[in-house]
Length: 206
Image (cartoon, rainbow, N blue to C red; front, top):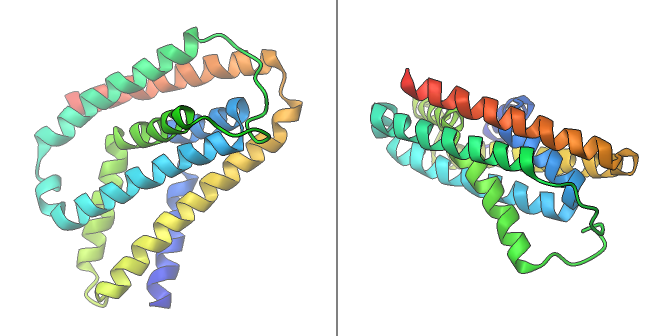
């Protein structure tokens, strides 16, 4: 049990080191809206990953052999990422009170959760990662059912914890962030999002 948990933690560290759309969204959300908002984004990411864990673990053979599913996800995911990117490019910078000092409206909590869930969920590379993990788990004959769940818990808990640490550090640095910096950060995030979106569409096209 302890070895499977440690293996899961090490795999979670690897996943956390990957820089993609989720990373930029999490940092930007923390800088602009505060740690609590970014925490809801991270929770959305966690729920999205958990859903993929369930889908890939119980249907890894079906998902791995379904090229059309991956292709549709690539097109839809690419379009959504491009949409997010354009919204970042055209948005206006506004100065708002620190969300860490005030309560977050329920609607804003939902929007943060949905942002994290959708940006992570529509990325085919996340799906491919969990398919590979599910395949690896199925090949581990030494794993019993308890080991499997401790392995997954290790991955998910590590990724969620590191996402919170990223958001917390980003917020602590916010005092050094000027409106001009935020303006250009939004532009950079938008360009990165559009780049990832185009990459996903090209990936889906094969």
